[in-house]
Length: 181
Image (cartoon, rainbow, N blue to C red; front, side, top):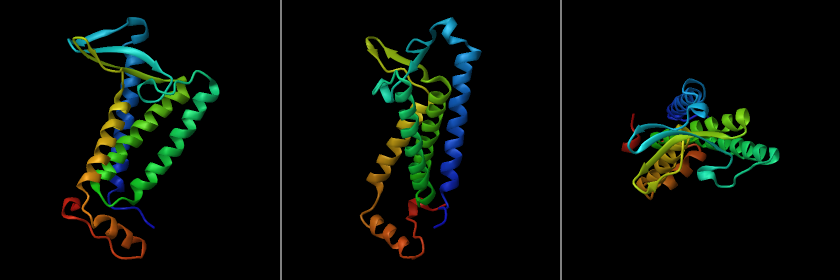
């Protein structure tokens, strides 16, 4: 089975997110030297701060051991391979782009785990007493990608699942009007 016509979009999005994520992390670590400089107020509700996240999203499943670190790397690698496989088969631009966001973010955070043993987080949003978690571009891309996949699930027509099944039987691809190039 070959690649879908939208796979290139997903791959391009993944590469763009990965490049932006890695570039901003290098800038924070070495350009701003945020570890030495300390927090930087950018706007009244936005600061740049350096946080080393040893867990997954929002610091869940924090891992302080070498085994835990490599377990998270392995889980990220397996999930990424599965998502790329899905991306290569999808018939939807929205799904391809959304998967590209998730894959680019996952690879960016995975590279951090390998290189530093933790993920570099640095964007801190706060308004009054409300404080959001510290995150990075990869985290934002993963959230946006997941939202895109959820949106796609709601936009899918009832017959889309039946039509997707006909592809396995060798029938030609039928794209919905929203998927037209």
